[in-house]
Amino acid sequence: MLRKTCSALAAVLTAIALSASAPAIAAGPQRDALVTPAPATADQAASTEASQPAPPTDGMTQQAAVTPPPVDTTHYQDDIVALVNDKPISAYDLHQRMALVMTTSNLPDNPEIKKKIRQQVLEQLETEMLQRQEALKNDITVSSVEVDKDIQDILTSNHMTMDQLKEVLARGHVNIATLRAQIAAQLLWQKAVSEEYAGRVHITPEAVDAEMARIAEGQHKVHYVVSEIFLPVDAPEQDGKVLKDAQNLETQIQAGAPFQAVARQFSQSPSAAEGGDIGLVYDGQLAPELTAELEKMKPGDISPPIRSIGGYYILLLRQRLEPVGTKIPDAQAQPATAPTSLPLARILLPLPPNTPKPMVENALKIALAIRSHITTCDVAKKLAQEVKGSMYFPLGDMKLADLSPQIRDAVLKTEPGGTADPFQSAAGVELFVRCDKAIPKIEAFQMPTRDQIEQQLFEEQISALARRYNRDLKRNADIELR
Image (cartoon, rainbow, N blue to C red):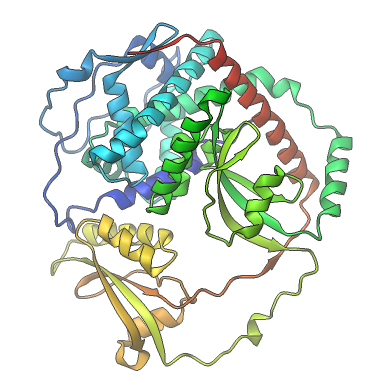
């Protein structure tokens, strides 16, 4: 089976948490109300509900906690932007998906960004329409319960409630039905690929033996933990356009959009369901041009678009593992003397006196979401600017003796380049970031187990078949733009 959607959406909801603050700490003007959804087409309804629908388990289909004033959407409700095998994609569908992309990718809502992502989002909707049609042709359905379960798993892992999710989506003018439809489309495609190919993919013990022998030969090479974004080039004349699309995505990521969220929205590889995660690779597993780029990167780096087999790749190097046998420095051998001063930055989410406990807890959750994305003090500054009501203070080189015991203990427990756990002070919820250079962690590669190898081989084969399946659907499709 292809991997589940929920782990990728966990990154999406972390990004959502960054896109808006709780009412207790919001300082900017209130945004417009949630756009009233247009009626779903019969094809869309069939995509998200099984032929034997079951009631939702947690009230997800109920109206948001705060009902916004109605908004006139008649100017685009009936407009059609594309026909995919005579099935329409409405202007409302495109409008809503663009809003979801901007909310979950932490992109600013302005005409320039909308212009950049419009065509990419439309192409994604066209692909989903083809995949949905293929699934329905084969009597494959997804129930409300399946969608509800994925969303509930995501909420649980991110310590969010359904009301919080609805509120954040409403701030981005996104109806929760749009998120549910995207999850349902991914689940339908996973089922379609599994039903089409799972029975045909058989990993023999000999294949596992051969792969283990090959990995053993490479155990003395550097290994990389990698995430990818893949944009296919289906015809030579598309090369320039796809390259431009990839460059736009790289620009958005470098500007602070979470890689996992962008991968989920735009990548055309099955790894998109995992936020682009392709796991552990080494020289010989990827195309030479991809490996050559990884060799130049440091953990946390994003590659420029790389032309390779089938299209363009953007890579995120998450971890580097040295060859087997590499001597790892003993942590006890590191200097044990505490520094007398440190370069620091501070993020404050201000709260008024006597703030109710639920609001404090919500502010702490937002602070944790911010902390998970901070890699440098420059990134911390950008994130603080994105979260309404938060404040960023570059403190420079601070003498630890001048700090309160609480802050001093927090920063000393934090590694260089890291961010201390958020805590509540009299001013609100605080985050302290160490601006000194992070010490690279050196780790050595370890041989995987037979079960891990078998799963890896299965996923590689099913992913290649899924790409071919999707390419064939596009080639045989009748797509008309309006």
